[in-house]
Figure 1 (cartoon, helix red, strand yellow):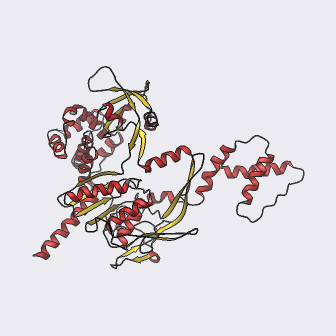
Figure 2 (cartoon, rainbow, N blue to C red):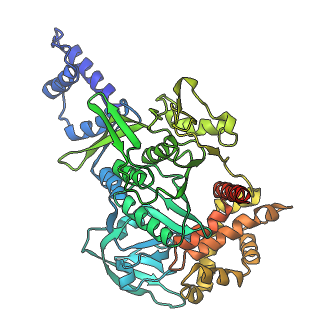
Amino acid sequence: MPAITMLLVVLLIVRMCDKEPRKVDVSDHKWDKLLVILDQIEQHYVDSIDYKDIVEKTLPHVMQNLDPHSVYLPPKELEVADESLTGNFSGIGIQFNVPNDTVVVINVVPGGPSERAGLLSGDRIITVDGENIAGVKMDQDSIVKRLKGPRGTTVKIGIKRDDLEELVPFTIKRDNIPVKSVDVSYMIDDSLGYIKLSKFARTSYTEVHEALEKLRGKGVRSLILDLRDNTGGYLDQALLMSNEFLAKGQLIVYMDGLHRQRRDFHADGKGSMQDVKLYVLINENSASSSEIFAGAIQDNDRGTIVGRRSFGKGLVQEPIYFSDKSGIRLTVARFYTPTGRCIQKPYSKDYQYDIIERYQHGEMTVADSIKRNDSLKFVTPAGKVVYGGGGIIPDIFVPIDTAGVTRFLVAVNRKSLQVKYSIKLADTYRAQLRQVKSFEDLEQLTRSIDIESGFLAFAKENGIVPKGDEWQKSKEFIVTQMKGLFGRYTSLDDEAFYPYINRLDNVIERVIEEEKGETEKTETTTK
């Protein structure tokens, strides 16, 4: 029974047990009735009360009745939420997979505790502090919990390495591990750069700035900033990033709320990337700060937004912390793009099912299926029409990609065979992988391996065989994905993974086509 309903029932029972109903004054003051009910329970309830338990169960119901983004976070949940955005946590510094119930180290964080201790890509973690964690179907959260811990504490792990029969023991002192938000940055060709930003964390602007400087040194003239699946984070990081690309005085965003005066944020003109052509990639999971950035770029006619309609979160949450280490994220304002759009989608009982509805009515595949509200139509300085009321609609729509999807691909995905085979490949070529220092080295190594035949044999061993032309349709996707997964077992990590995976990306392909068309247009004009 929901906690608030339970409180009302308790009050009713107290009244029924009296010979004469007790009359309690409930004025029109906002919270009086709730306080009176709680007071009556405290004074008259038949049994002792676990006040903490009632409060903890009631607060989430109170918050969820405000809006979809105001939330109460108990101490542990608050710690996890903050940890993902503050830029570091304490642990041993590894990336790992858990295929076949055994932790396999994909990579070690450079300069982190595990690298200093001597852990290597491909190591299997069998024991943690004497407890066996291999082959016991332990979930990933439980494994993480055993490996993480306060800075300065130690953890003892037993490693199965290569062909050694006995476990190799390691004692690792936990330390702060940086949580990067820029997954990768690299040059797609001589002039087009790419940056993938996974979240707006405390260090995001610094990371992006460093990536931009690196690409600037390589001759970048056009840039893809990939904000797909970026659910947001700190507002100030979105403001700092927007400032890099906008001219002095241009409005980035403004906020307004019942208890918050309107506040405008403008670019100061000191951004270092004002001359770089910009493409911003978004999809249905791009939210909050991602939408602030995309809206600022679109409304100032500064760049091109490519992909699918964004999530539609136009509410600003303020964190409030309590002495028991719990806290709330309370919505205090709405944000508005420079043209005056609030892109918050409507609240409704189906709010959480909005993405499913987009699939159902065809928005993921057909641009004309995107709902546009003519009463929320706005115009940019250059005369481009944009819409409020539910997300950022891209300038260039790119449908969800279903090319290469076959029964065979679905079957191997369900069994995670690509991940499992990449581990098998990495074990076979461990010595060569440790010699890879550049993407060109990796390309040379992958060309020497018959990934296609090996994977088909591996899939057959696992009871999955392609029928008809299934392999021809799915081959490019699977083999390219395998190369990227295989490359992650080198020191290059994501700088090996994304250059391969992006070759399959129809959104990036659309940007490259756009760039090529602009280049041809310029060359024709010059002639």
